Image 1: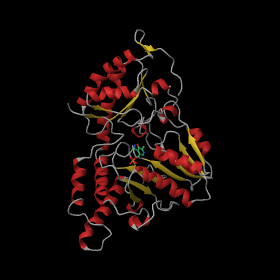
Image 2: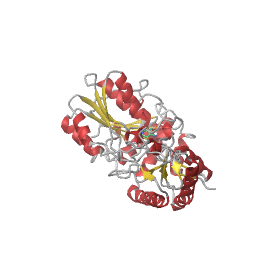
Image 3: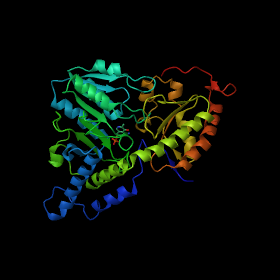
Image 4: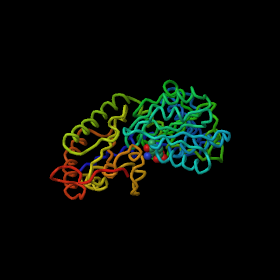
Length: 403
Ligand code: PMP
Protein backbone atom coordinates (compact mmCIF):
# COMPACT_ATOMS: atom_id res chain seq x y z
CA UNK A 1 0.00 0.00 0.00
CA UNK A 2 1.36 3.43 -0.95
CA UNK A 3 2.08 5.58 2.10
CA UNK A 4 -0.06 8.69 2.21
CA UNK A 5 1.91 11.35 3.99
CA UNK A 6 -0.35 14.17 5.18
CA UNK A 7 1.74 15.46 8.08
CA UNK A 8 3.67 18.13 6.20
CA UNK A 9 3.39 20.77 8.92
CA UNK A 10 5.53 18.41 11.05
CA UNK A 11 8.15 17.81 8.37
CA UNK A 12 8.38 17.25 4.62
CA UNK A 13 10.08 14.88 2.20
CA UNK A 14 13.32 16.19 0.71
CA UNK A 15 12.73 17.31 -2.88
CA UNK A 16 14.87 15.40 -5.43
CA UNK A 17 16.10 18.73 -6.82
CA UNK A 18 17.23 19.75 -3.32
CA UNK A 19 19.10 16.49 -2.81
CA UNK A 20 20.79 16.84 -6.20
CA UNK A 21 21.90 20.41 -5.41
CA UNK A 22 23.35 19.30 -2.07
CA UNK A 23 25.15 16.19 -3.31
CA UNK A 24 28.46 17.73 -4.54
CA UNK A 25 28.96 19.47 -1.20
CA UNK A 26 29.02 16.11 0.60
CA UNK A 27 31.45 14.50 -1.82
CA UNK A 28 33.75 16.59 -4.02
CA UNK A 29 33.26 20.07 -2.47
CA UNK A 30 33.47 19.14 1.20
CA UNK A 31 35.90 21.91 2.21
CA UNK A 32 35.65 24.30 5.10
CA UNK A 33 34.43 27.52 3.46
CA UNK A 34 36.78 29.55 5.69
CA UNK A 35 39.91 27.78 4.37
CA UNK A 36 42.30 29.80 2.25
CA UNK A 37 43.16 27.33 -0.53
CA UNK A 38 41.55 27.52 -3.94
CA UNK A 39 39.53 24.29 -3.55
CA UNK A 40 37.52 25.80 -0.67
CA UNK A 41 36.40 28.75 -2.74
CA UNK A 42 33.50 26.88 -4.31
CA UNK A 43 32.10 26.16 -0.82
CA UNK A 44 32.35 29.83 0.19
CA UNK A 45 30.81 30.84 -3.12
CA UNK A 46 27.95 28.36 -2.68
CA UNK A 47 27.04 29.92 0.67
CA UNK A 48 27.06 33.39 -0.83
CA UNK A 49 24.95 32.21 -3.76
CA UNK A 50 22.48 30.57 -1.35
CA UNK A 51 22.20 33.82 0.63
CA UNK A 52 21.47 35.74 -2.57
CA UNK A 53 18.85 33.22 -3.71
CA UNK A 54 17.03 33.37 -0.38
CA UNK A 55 17.22 37.17 -0.30
CA UNK A 56 15.57 37.17 -3.76
CA UNK A 57 12.87 34.75 -2.58
CA UNK A 58 12.04 37.06 0.33
CA UNK A 59 11.33 40.07 -1.87
CA UNK A 60 14.73 41.09 -3.18
CA UNK A 61 16.31 42.26 0.08
CA UNK A 62 20.03 42.80 0.68
CA UNK A 63 21.54 39.30 1.15
CA UNK A 64 23.76 40.23 4.13
CA UNK A 65 20.60 40.41 6.25
CA UNK A 66 20.17 36.60 6.07
CA UNK A 67 21.93 34.40 8.67
CA UNK A 68 22.01 30.64 8.38
CA UNK A 69 21.14 28.69 11.52
CA UNK A 70 20.53 25.08 12.53
CA UNK A 71 16.72 25.33 12.77
CA UNK A 72 13.79 27.68 13.18
CA UNK A 73 14.04 26.95 16.90
CA UNK A 74 17.58 28.36 16.89
CA UNK A 75 16.48 31.34 14.77
CA UNK A 76 13.70 32.18 17.25
CA UNK A 77 16.08 31.79 20.22
CA UNK A 78 18.64 33.97 18.52
CA UNK A 79 16.06 36.65 17.64
CA UNK A 80 14.55 36.89 21.11
CA UNK A 81 17.56 36.36 23.39
CA UNK A 82 19.79 38.43 21.07
CA UNK A 83 17.37 41.34 21.22
CA UNK A 84 16.99 41.16 25.00
CA UNK A 85 20.79 41.12 25.40
CA UNK A 86 21.20 44.19 23.21
CA UNK A 87 18.49 46.28 24.89
CA UNK A 88 18.74 46.02 28.68
CA UNK A 89 16.70 49.20 29.08
CA UNK A 90 13.50 47.76 27.55
CA UNK A 91 11.76 44.98 29.45
CA UNK A 92 8.38 44.33 27.79
CA UNK A 93 7.78 41.51 25.30
CA UNK A 94 4.53 40.86 23.42
CA UNK A 95 3.68 37.45 22.00
CA UNK A 96 0.60 35.22 21.65
CA UNK A 97 -0.69 32.21 23.55
CA UNK A 98 -0.60 30.10 20.37
CA UNK A 99 3.05 30.42 19.30
CA UNK A 100 5.17 27.37 18.61
CA UNK A 101 7.07 26.20 21.74
CA UNK A 102 10.27 27.61 20.23
CA UNK A 103 8.85 31.09 20.90
CA UNK A 104 6.52 30.34 23.79
CA UNK A 105 9.11 28.64 25.99
CA UNK A 106 11.62 31.46 25.40
CA UNK A 107 8.99 34.01 26.42
CA UNK A 108 8.20 32.00 29.56
CA UNK A 109 11.94 31.94 30.34
CA UNK A 110 12.15 35.70 29.80
CA UNK A 111 9.24 36.15 32.22
CA UNK A 112 11.10 33.98 34.78
CA UNK A 113 14.09 36.30 34.32
CA UNK A 114 11.94 39.26 35.28
CA UNK A 115 10.80 40.65 31.92
CA UNK A 116 7.23 41.71 31.53
CA UNK A 117 5.69 39.37 28.92
CA UNK A 118 2.19 39.72 27.46
CA UNK A 119 0.77 36.47 26.05
CA UNK A 120 -2.08 37.74 23.89
CA UNK A 121 -5.19 35.54 23.90
CA UNK A 122 -7.01 34.39 20.74
CA UNK A 123 -10.73 34.04 20.08
CA UNK A 124 -12.57 30.80 19.28
CA UNK A 125 -11.49 31.04 15.63
CA UNK A 126 -7.86 31.17 16.74
CA UNK A 127 -7.56 34.82 15.71
CA UNK A 128 -5.83 37.59 17.55
CA UNK A 129 -8.04 40.22 19.16
CA UNK A 130 -6.73 43.42 17.61
CA UNK A 131 -7.81 45.72 20.44
CA UNK A 132 -5.84 43.60 22.97
CA UNK A 133 -2.76 43.94 20.79
CA UNK A 134 -3.15 47.70 20.44
CA UNK A 135 -3.72 48.02 24.20
CA UNK A 136 -0.52 46.09 24.96
CA UNK A 137 1.66 48.33 22.74
CA UNK A 138 3.53 51.29 24.23
CA UNK A 139 6.95 52.87 24.06
CA UNK A 140 8.37 50.45 26.63
CA UNK A 141 7.88 47.42 24.39
CA UNK A 142 11.16 45.84 23.32
CA UNK A 143 9.94 43.22 20.86
CA UNK A 144 6.76 41.67 19.48
CA UNK A 145 6.87 38.06 18.32
CA UNK A 146 3.75 36.94 16.48
CA UNK A 147 3.79 34.05 14.04
CA UNK A 148 2.66 34.38 10.42
CA UNK A 149 0.71 31.12 10.48
CA UNK A 150 -0.05 28.57 13.15
CA UNK A 151 1.37 25.08 12.68
CA UNK A 152 -1.59 23.30 14.32
CA UNK A 153 -4.63 25.09 12.90
CA UNK A 154 -3.16 26.93 9.91
CA UNK A 155 -4.75 30.17 11.15
CA UNK A 156 -2.82 33.14 9.71
CA UNK A 157 -2.00 36.35 11.55
CA UNK A 158 -1.96 39.77 9.82
CA UNK A 159 1.73 40.34 10.54
CA UNK A 160 2.12 43.17 8.00
CA UNK A 161 -0.65 45.17 9.63
CA UNK A 162 0.47 44.32 13.18
CA UNK A 163 4.00 45.45 12.31
CA UNK A 164 2.71 48.72 10.88
CA UNK A 165 0.72 49.42 14.05
CA UNK A 166 3.74 48.60 16.26
CA UNK A 167 6.00 50.97 14.31
CA UNK A 168 3.36 53.72 14.42
CA UNK A 169 3.22 53.34 18.20
CA UNK A 170 7.01 53.51 18.49
CA UNK A 171 9.51 52.98 15.64
CA UNK A 172 11.96 51.47 18.17
CA UNK A 173 9.75 48.44 18.85
CA UNK A 174 11.48 45.44 17.24
CA UNK A 175 9.08 43.28 15.23
CA UNK A 176 9.90 39.57 14.96
CA UNK A 177 7.84 36.88 13.26
CA UNK A 178 8.10 33.11 13.08
CA UNK A 179 7.42 32.42 9.39
CA UNK A 180 8.20 28.70 9.55
CA UNK A 181 4.77 27.62 8.29
CA UNK A 182 4.36 30.59 5.95
CA UNK A 183 7.26 30.20 3.52
CA UNK A 184 6.01 28.58 0.33
CA UNK A 185 2.38 28.90 1.41
CA UNK A 186 1.93 32.66 1.80
CA UNK A 187 3.65 35.61 0.18
CA UNK A 188 6.66 36.68 2.28
CA UNK A 189 7.94 39.99 0.92
CA UNK A 190 10.28 41.78 3.30
CA UNK A 191 10.74 44.70 0.94
CA UNK A 192 7.09 45.46 0.39
CA UNK A 193 4.23 44.08 2.55
CA UNK A 194 6.53 43.06 5.41
CA UNK A 195 8.74 46.16 5.28
CA UNK A 196 8.06 46.87 8.98
CA UNK A 197 9.23 43.41 10.07
CA UNK A 198 12.75 43.50 11.57
CA UNK A 199 13.37 39.80 12.15
CA UNK A 200 11.93 36.69 10.53
CA UNK A 201 12.69 33.03 11.26
CA UNK A 202 12.13 29.92 9.18
CA UNK A 203 13.23 26.34 8.72
CA UNK A 204 14.32 24.04 5.89
CA UNK A 205 12.44 20.88 6.74
CA UNK A 206 8.97 22.37 6.28
CA UNK A 207 9.75 23.21 2.64
CA UNK A 208 11.36 19.98 1.39
CA UNK A 209 14.93 20.72 2.54
CA UNK A 210 16.57 18.61 5.29
CA UNK A 211 16.00 18.91 9.01
CA UNK A 212 18.74 20.83 10.82
CA UNK A 213 18.96 24.00 8.77
CA UNK A 214 17.14 27.30 9.15
CA UNK A 215 17.59 31.00 8.61
CA UNK A 216 17.06 34.25 10.41
CA UNK A 217 16.49 37.58 8.69
CA UNK A 218 17.83 40.52 10.71
CA UNK A 219 17.06 43.85 9.09
CA UNK A 220 20.03 46.18 8.85
CA UNK A 221 20.09 48.54 11.85
CA UNK A 222 18.13 46.25 14.21
CA UNK A 223 19.42 46.47 17.80
CA UNK A 224 20.40 42.85 18.26
CA UNK A 225 23.47 40.96 19.48
CA UNK A 226 24.68 37.56 18.27
CA UNK A 227 23.44 34.69 20.40
CA UNK A 228 25.91 31.95 19.40
CA UNK A 229 29.49 33.07 19.91
CA UNK A 230 32.73 31.55 18.65
CA UNK A 231 34.38 31.85 15.22
CA UNK A 232 33.82 34.58 12.69
CA UNK A 233 31.41 32.71 10.44
CA UNK A 234 28.32 34.56 9.21
CA UNK A 235 30.16 37.86 9.82
CA UNK A 236 30.44 37.00 13.53
CA UNK A 237 26.66 36.75 13.89
CA UNK A 238 26.37 32.94 14.14
CA UNK A 239 29.49 31.03 15.03
CA UNK A 240 30.15 27.45 13.89
CA UNK A 241 31.48 26.00 10.64
CA UNK A 242 28.78 26.48 8.04
CA UNK A 243 26.74 23.43 7.01
CA UNK A 244 27.37 24.01 3.31
CA UNK A 245 25.26 21.19 1.78
CA UNK A 246 22.27 22.04 3.97
CA UNK A 247 22.56 25.76 3.25
CA UNK A 248 22.64 24.99 -0.48
CA UNK A 249 19.61 22.70 0.03
CA UNK A 250 17.73 25.42 1.91
CA UNK A 251 18.23 27.89 -0.94
CA UNK A 252 17.12 25.35 -3.56
CA UNK A 253 14.04 24.51 -1.48
CA UNK A 254 13.14 28.21 -1.15
CA UNK A 255 13.48 28.68 -4.89
CA UNK A 256 11.18 25.69 -5.55
CA UNK A 257 8.69 26.78 -2.87
CA UNK A 258 8.40 30.28 -4.27
CA UNK A 259 8.26 29.29 -7.96
CA UNK A 260 4.63 28.88 -8.95
CA UNK A 261 3.50 29.29 -5.35
CA UNK A 262 0.11 30.75 -6.28
CA UNK A 263 -0.89 27.93 -8.68
CA UNK A 264 0.46 25.25 -6.38
CA UNK A 265 -1.37 26.60 -3.36
CA UNK A 266 -4.59 26.80 -5.39
CA UNK A 267 -4.22 23.09 -6.21
CA UNK A 268 -3.44 22.20 -2.59
CA UNK A 269 -6.36 24.32 -1.34
CA UNK A 270 -8.73 22.57 -3.74
CA UNK A 271 -7.68 19.16 -2.37
CA UNK A 272 -7.92 20.37 1.24
CA UNK A 273 -11.38 21.84 0.65
CA UNK A 274 -12.65 18.64 -0.99
CA UNK A 275 -11.40 16.65 1.99
CA UNK A 276 -12.98 19.10 4.41
CA UNK A 277 -16.35 19.32 2.65
CA UNK A 278 -16.74 15.60 2.05
CA UNK A 279 -15.85 14.69 5.63
CA UNK A 280 -18.27 17.35 6.88
CA UNK A 281 -21.04 15.64 4.90
CA UNK A 282 -20.15 12.13 6.03
CA UNK A 283 -19.23 12.49 9.70
CA UNK A 284 -21.59 13.85 12.37
CA UNK A 285 -20.30 15.91 15.33
CA UNK A 286 -17.10 16.90 13.54
CA UNK A 287 -15.70 20.38 13.91
CA UNK A 288 -13.10 22.21 11.88
CA UNK A 289 -10.77 24.03 14.24
CA UNK A 290 -10.11 27.54 12.95
CA UNK A 291 -12.63 27.22 10.11
CA UNK A 292 -14.11 30.69 10.56
CA UNK A 293 -10.72 32.45 10.66
CA UNK A 294 -10.28 35.10 7.95
CA UNK A 295 -7.27 33.30 6.55
CA UNK A 296 -6.08 29.73 7.02
CA UNK A 297 -3.11 28.05 5.36
CA UNK A 298 -4.39 26.31 2.22
CA UNK A 299 -2.75 23.00 3.15
CA UNK A 300 -3.96 22.59 6.74
CA UNK A 301 -7.08 20.89 8.11
CA UNK A 302 -7.46 20.45 11.86
CA UNK A 303 -10.52 18.38 12.70
CA UNK A 304 -12.14 17.64 16.05
CA UNK A 305 -14.16 14.44 16.41
CA UNK A 306 -16.23 14.47 19.57
CA UNK A 307 -16.18 11.36 21.73
CA UNK A 308 -13.01 9.68 20.38
CA UNK A 309 -9.29 9.89 21.11
CA UNK A 310 -7.07 11.51 18.47
CA UNK A 311 -4.39 8.87 19.14
CA UNK A 312 -6.84 6.03 18.38
CA UNK A 313 -7.78 7.73 15.10
CA UNK A 314 -4.09 8.03 14.15
CA UNK A 315 -3.49 4.38 14.98
CA UNK A 316 -6.42 3.32 12.80
CA UNK A 317 -5.33 5.64 9.97
CA UNK A 318 -1.83 4.20 10.09
CA UNK A 319 -3.30 0.75 9.38
CA UNK A 320 -4.27 2.24 6.00
CA UNK A 321 -0.76 3.76 5.63
CA UNK A 322 -2.09 7.27 6.26
CA UNK A 323 0.29 9.46 8.30
CA UNK A 324 -1.38 12.38 10.06
CA UNK A 325 -0.92 13.90 13.51
CA UNK A 326 -2.89 14.78 16.60
CA UNK A 327 -2.33 18.39 17.59
CA UNK A 328 1.29 19.41 17.20
CA UNK A 329 3.90 16.71 16.57
CA UNK A 330 6.15 18.69 18.89
CA UNK A 331 3.79 18.14 21.82
CA UNK A 332 2.95 14.53 21.09
CA UNK A 333 4.44 12.18 23.62
CA UNK A 334 2.68 14.15 26.32
CA UNK A 335 -0.97 13.83 27.21
CA UNK A 336 -1.34 17.57 27.75
CA UNK A 337 -4.05 19.00 25.53
CA UNK A 338 -2.81 21.23 22.72
CA UNK A 339 -2.08 24.72 24.07
CA UNK A 340 -3.32 26.17 20.77
CA UNK A 341 -6.74 24.49 20.84
CA UNK A 342 -7.00 25.20 24.57
CA UNK A 343 -6.34 28.91 23.95
CA UNK A 344 -9.22 28.84 21.43
CA UNK A 345 -11.55 27.62 24.19
CA UNK A 346 -12.31 24.32 22.45
CA UNK A 347 -13.94 21.81 24.84
CA UNK A 348 -11.58 19.06 26.03
CA UNK A 349 -13.71 16.29 24.48
CA UNK A 350 -13.00 17.93 21.12
CA UNK A 351 -9.31 18.71 21.79
CA UNK A 352 -8.60 15.09 22.65
CA UNK A 353 -10.31 13.99 19.45
CA UNK A 354 -8.41 16.39 17.19
CA UNK A 355 -6.42 15.30 14.16
CA UNK A 356 -4.40 17.43 11.78
CA UNK A 357 -4.01 16.75 8.08
CA UNK A 358 -1.40 18.89 6.34
CA UNK A 359 -0.77 18.53 2.62
CA UNK A 360 2.18 19.33 0.38
CA UNK A 361 2.90 19.58 -3.32
CA UNK A 362 3.55 15.81 -3.33
CA UNK A 363 -0.06 14.94 -2.44
CA UNK A 364 -2.64 14.17 -5.09
CA UNK A 365 -6.39 13.56 -5.39
CA UNK A 366 -5.93 9.80 -4.85
CA UNK A 367 -4.53 10.51 -1.39
CA UNK A 368 -7.65 12.49 -0.57
CA UNK A 369 -9.82 9.66 -1.96
CA UNK A 370 -8.25 7.14 0.42
CA UNK A 371 -8.72 9.36 3.48
CA UNK A 372 -12.35 9.98 2.52
CA UNK A 373 -12.88 6.26 1.98
CA UNK A 374 -11.61 5.16 5.39
CA UNK A 375 -12.03 7.96 7.93
CA UNK A 376 -15.85 7.98 8.34
CA UNK A 377 -15.79 4.22 9.11
CA UNK A 378 -12.92 4.64 11.57
CA UNK A 379 -14.78 7.35 13.48
CA UNK A 380 -18.04 5.39 13.53
CA UNK A 381 -16.27 2.26 14.87
CA UNK A 382 -14.35 4.14 17.54
CA UNK A 383 -17.50 5.89 18.67
CA UNK A 384 -19.23 2.51 19.12
CA UNK A 385 -16.54 1.73 21.72
CA UNK A 386 -16.55 5.15 23.35
CA UNK A 387 -18.23 5.66 26.74
CA UNK A 388 -18.67 9.32 25.75
CA UNK A 389 -20.71 8.58 22.63
CA UNK A 390 -24.41 7.72 22.39
CA UNK A 391 -24.57 5.65 19.22
CA UNK A 392 -28.35 5.66 19.05
CA UNK A 393 -28.76 9.41 19.30
CA UNK A 394 -25.48 10.14 17.46
CA UNK A 395 -24.24 12.61 20.06
CA UNK A 396 -22.03 12.91 23.14
CA UNK A 397 -23.30 11.31 26.36
CA UNK A 398 -21.72 14.16 28.31
CA UNK A 399 -21.43 17.86 27.63
CA UNK A 400 -17.96 18.96 26.55
CA UNK A 401 -16.37 21.30 29.05
CA UNK A 402 -13.17 23.23 29.01
CA UNK A 403 -9.91 21.48 29.80
N1 PMP B 1 7.88 27.40 14.38
C1 PMP B 1 6.84 26.74 13.84
C2 PMP B 1 5.59 27.49 13.54
C3 PMP B 1 6.95 25.38 13.54
O1 PMP B 1 5.92 24.74 12.99
C4 PMP B 1 8.16 24.70 13.84
C5 PMP B 1 8.31 23.23 13.57
N2 PMP B 1 7.28 22.43 14.09
C6 PMP B 1 9.21 25.44 14.41
C7 PMP B 1 9.04 26.79 14.65
C8 PMP B 1 10.52 24.79 14.76
O2 PMP B 1 11.23 24.45 13.61
P1 PMP B 1 12.55 23.56 13.69
O3 PMP B 1 12.07 22.15 13.73
O4 PMP B 1 13.32 23.89 12.46
O5 PMP B 1 13.27 23.96 14.92
